[in-house]
Length: 347
View 1: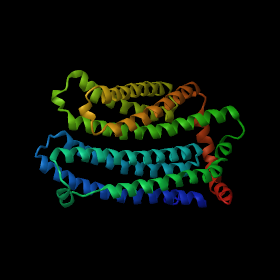
View 2 (view 1 turned 120 degrees about the vertical axis):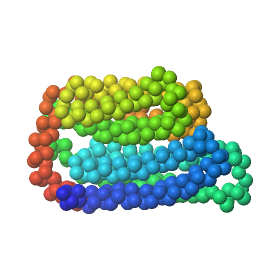
View 3 (view 1 turned 90 degrees about the vertical axis):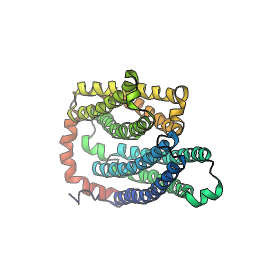
C-alpha cells in the first residue's frame, strides 16, 4: 500500500514533496500564529471582563478560521495524492486553483485579524506601552505566511504545466478514440472533481465559519422558528445533499443526482441570503467576519454555479455506462501506468 502512494516519475515525486512541504511549513507557521492568538485572546478577555462580549467572541472565531486554514492544507495534500494516483489532468488544474484560493484565504485571514484586533484595542483603549508588554504581535508571521503561500502557488502552476503533458495521454489510454465517450468521461471527471472542491468549500470552509459565527453571536433559545430554519436546518440539509452527490457519481443514479442539484440551488439561495444579511441586515453580527465570509461566499457561489451546470449535463448522460467504462479501463491502466509515466517523464 505504501508503494502505491509513492508515484513513479520525477515530476510526480516532486509534486508530492512540494505538497507535503507546503503542508508542513505553512502548518508550523499557522500553529505559531494560533498559539500567540490564544494568549492574546486570554488578555483581551481579562481586560474586557465579559465572556459574552461580541468582539471577544469574534477573536475566538478568528482562531477557528486559522485552524480551518490548516485543514485546507491537509485537504490539498489529500487532493495531491488522489490526483497522482489517478493521473488526472482535470484534478491537476483543480489542485492549482484550490491552492490559489488558499493564498486568497491567507490574505483574507490577515485582513480580518487586523480588523478584529483594531476594534478590541479601541474598546479597551490600549496604549502602545501596554501593547508591547502584554500582547503578541503576529503581523510579521502573517506576512511570512502570505509570502510563502505566493511562492508555493506559483510553484503549483509551474508543476501543473510540467505534469500536464505527463498526464495528457491518460484519457486517450483509457478510452481510445471514441470521441463521444471521451466527452462524457471528461464531463463525469469534472463533476467528480467539482464535488471534491464543493465538499470542502461548502461543508467545511463556509459552514464551519457560519456555525461559529451563529453560535458565538446568538443564543439559540432566543431564535425564532424561521431563524432556526435559516441558521441551522438549511445548512444541515445542504451537508446531507453533498452526500447524495457522492452517492450519485458512484452509482450513476439520476435520482440522487437530482437531489444534489436541488441542494445546490438551496446552497446558492442560502448564501445569497447570508450575503444580503451581511450588508443589509444585522451588520453588527458580521462586523468582524464580513471580509472572510464575503470572499468565501463569492468563491463558493461561483463554484456552485459551475457545478450546477456540469451536474445538469451529467444528469442527461447518466445511464450511458460511464462509470462502467472507467472501471473496465482502470484494470488495463493499472498494468501499464507505471511504465507509461516513466517514459513520459523523461521529457
